[in-house]
Length: 229
Ligand SMILES: N[C@@H](CCC(=O)N[C@@H](CS)C(=O)NCC(=O)O)C(=O)O
Image (tube, rainbow, N blue to C red):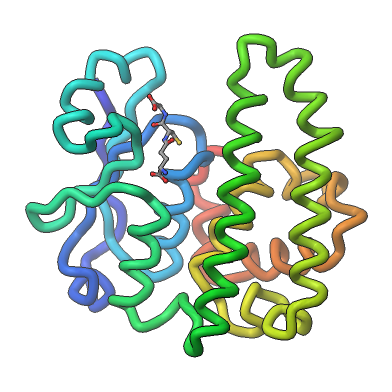
């Protein structure tokens, strides 16, 4: 049976997004696309229900997931009788509803979307290597090739675009949904731990990771028993 947990008390942010979202996602520590949603909701003080499927039980629930989502993938979000799919589109929708977590100008919105897309592309390559049947070879190779390329790309983008250059976030001093996406892929690649050891060559990205972990609700979450590593 998947585990179900209610997190937080519904408040004004739930009113803005139209209710209390229910997340269907893997029981995969505090990792993955579903974790980006959780982190965003924690930060925005959105109460939510967290349904977690172990990898072994997921196949039994796949037909229910595919009734909700034609691609049969998770995250799937139920919200006030509606089904929302495609996690990045959901983040953007909620950012707009909250009137926060997005750029104000077209250029800023473009830039948040672009940095989110870089992190999405990186995550795709990470998942292929990490879940490869040949992980012993594929993941170390990924770390030396694609991962370095994406770390370098984010570092260069964040250090050169005028919206990002001062930091700490993608949009300077204004946090956006893209920061959660970028933070989480660094986290899932185990780069945020061990004193940011794996990120030494990427100081601007470290600045973003530090700032994310200093956000009061993110900090509280990372220190709580809801954080599963
Ligand atoms: N673009 C989709 C990607 C969804 C996706 O690939 N989800 C993965 C887990 S993070 C999944 O469900 N994999 C298992 C499967 O497809 O059976 C999104 O952002 O929601």
